[in-house]
Length: 266
Image (cartoon, rainbow, N blue to C red; front, side, top):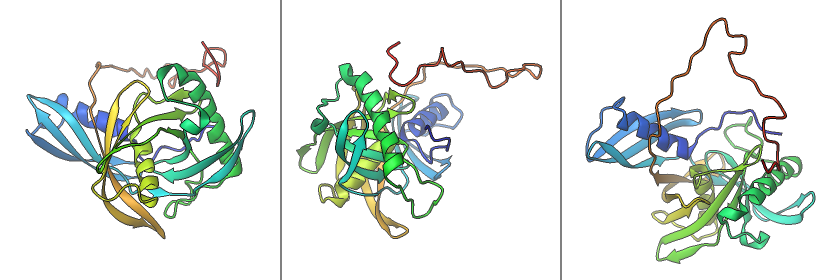
């Protein structure tokens, strides 16, 4: 079942909002660096924008503290079998699986299968495992499945592919800033990343976010990292929405035969 909770934070949406605020002139742009603070459901998000020639060239957001939930848990996925998963929080809650072990290279032709299986894994995790946020007892579910790609390392700089499955069955167009934060928390706990190290994640369409562990902290009794996520967004249009007081369907409508279900190929 899809959680109704508002996500505490979104890396890609924070990058998009900051870009719109600056490129449209809503917030005055200061070159070469503009700093601002956004308010997300999970708290305040500090933003640093690198600006040139009147445009935001890249946006860096300091994400919420990110931490590991559990490691190496066995999960039974109906129709697929038993798999090993890790769980982590990166501004939202994730079930993390090794893509290569499941036979995925995280390329575009796999998108449909990744979307379908990812939802099955998330649902199985919500049925069989427990998520616990030390400072938010109401956040007790898993939102997404991260298919984590193989790591490539050059010094303290790492690269990987990533694909995040979202309810009711789609793949994020971006590398997902919260997923990147969760992955870095896992890598920090295993000793594969330290403060100052970076991890660049590439999505299934080739877009990239660069993550950095800027510091460590505590969330309740859990060790956590402070992640920074850097990416870029572009304005695609300006849209005007109307709400007529006489409209009997002010929030729109949804019909089951026109809204794709999980596993739909249409």
